[in-house]
Image (cartoon, rainbow, N blue to C red; front, side, top):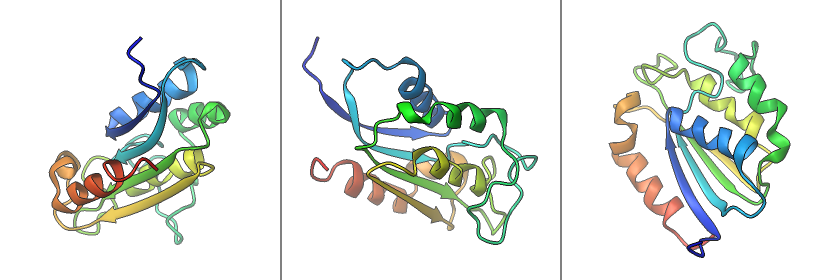
Amino acid sequence: QYGVEHYNFLGHSNGGLVLTDYLEYVSLSIDPKPNKILFLGTPFNDVGWKYNEMTPTFNEVKKVSDVLKRYLDNKQRLPKTISVVSVAGNVADGNSDGTVPVTSLLAGGLIYGDSQSYQTFLVTENAKHSQLVVHPTVMRLIQTFLWSAKK
């Protein structure tokens, strides 16, 4: 209706899950398409340690939550032409931003890893979950990634 064909998206915490739900289960072929997606502290493999045991390589998922399984089951619906950045906070080497384990956010690579580009960043200084959206390093990333040239 408004002529929007593409958009960039920033999803903090469950906001990233809402976008993933939309892309996998709701979006239509006529809907605008994402160019770039930035996830901040998104719990792709749920919160807590039941599913997010640390592994030596930091990128192995030992247990898959119902949330992650649901996204993996329908990831073929995700657009492949997007650029994705996922940012995890790590407070005092606790392997968590205080709410979301680092491994839970990194599990997003299992969902979005086939995208045109997929990168993860770990922010360690004052990187509490609720503060990720105003963290100076993250703010610079938002500016350079989301508001840089079209792709």
